[in-house]
Image (cartoon, rainbow, N blue to C red):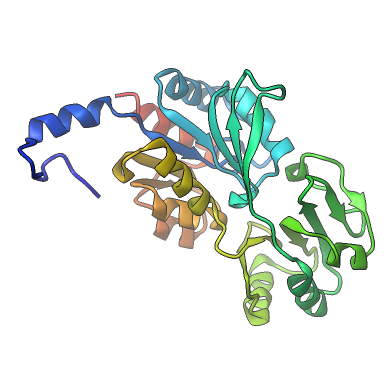
Length: 286
């Protein structure tokens, strides 16, 4: 990580570096569930106000979530971000926000994959699990009346063969018969190839295209924005945030995060129940 005391070439002195760094924007990537909102979906006033203050200060604040587009938009609206970018579906979908656009946003990048190999392997080992996928048109297809708030739309019930034939942006697997540890072990034994996956707090699996994570999407945006790596900040709590925390110049884990997430972070803040994200956001205001 670049520091203010490092020497540079071409006659640029330390004081000039310090001046530049104090006036350069931060690029701030914020997870949603377990970070901005608790597990009941509630965002506290201190967190909302701190996020709004960072936006008002002119920093680039980006939501980076496993949620799908329609479940992400209410969070963006709640904070009041109307320009910039957002990352959904664990990096599978990137939005550009612009109030002059008809919907206030446009999809500028989408990563799709063939879910059939993963679905076949998973169903063989987890026959009673529930499956859902977001297709390339933003529809959710699901088995066994599987619905979740993170989908953002009502899932369409289909048979397994229909899911095998779809093109996916996001694949979700949920088991009510396994602990997260058992579920994770099963996934590792299956040895999924050609996809990127993360296991959540419960026996819940999110799958994206190979190489696609929140971090990969954020790095693409960082290059576009021209933000220096050491001016990037990320806050998260889930296993799907591990790459993002490692990507950021300042990666902050929420206090209630699993041990492997805590280990991936540069810092640990308070839990979501103690407004940990607000403490970090306020620290960016100088």
